[in-house]
Length: 278
Image 1 (cartoon, rainbow, N blue to C red):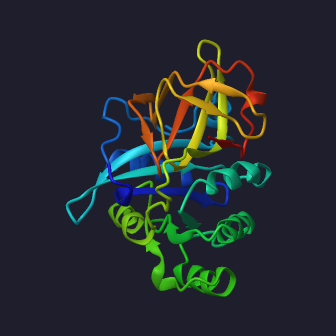
Image 2 (cartoon, rainbow, N blue to C red; image 1 turned 30 degrees about the vertical axis):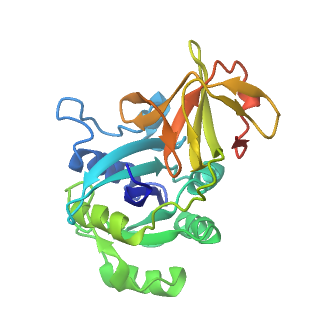
Image 3 (cartoon, rainbow, N blue to C red; image 1 turned 90 degrees about the vertical axis):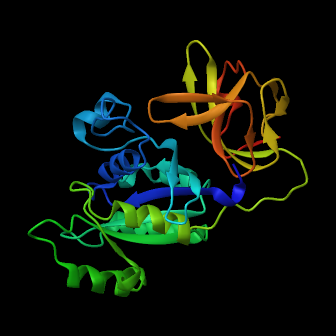
């Protein structure tokens, strides 16, 4: 798929402003998951996350969306935690994106973590799409939220999308905004592989699974890659996309994409966060 049809974005918000519910609705609206596979907090993989209703670890996922212009876009969503204790998780996810959805609760308004995440996104020059969520609540106070957006966050309230993730309101408008307001990834066509490592997980059978954002070049099974921080070299065994229900292998990944690779890496210390794969 053309890099012009790729969008990389995160969802940032204060805790309990409906970020994970919105992620679920985006997956459902784009038919990324079937009716049979549907469940709440789909991107929360840990039992503690489901029990407490919070996101602790970022969860990337690739979805495909047919927009109003008739074109099908590849949207790489990097879900992020909302709690202040996990701001490092947020920052490294934002580093792999070109834009972010800023979720504000229509009843609670702009809160501390909303502002903290907003500054993280602004430091990276990301395109910001404000979303006023939970507009269906009887306690929703839109005039107050409008004032806070303009006075505290410095975003005109006319740019905000009205939504209710729980009721499925405004989901189409959000998807269209992602396509229209967030720019496609920029890359230099010099053929050299440069990929940003933004996370990794250890699998007992496959070794370390490296989550990366490709800045330039391509990566495919069989090629030798080098981790710039440690100097370690590995042979790629598998690469592909992150899907809601697991990893989806691909023949190769290209510049602008968010994906994973495995290479029989035995030690997670060999894949440092923020490292460059080349």
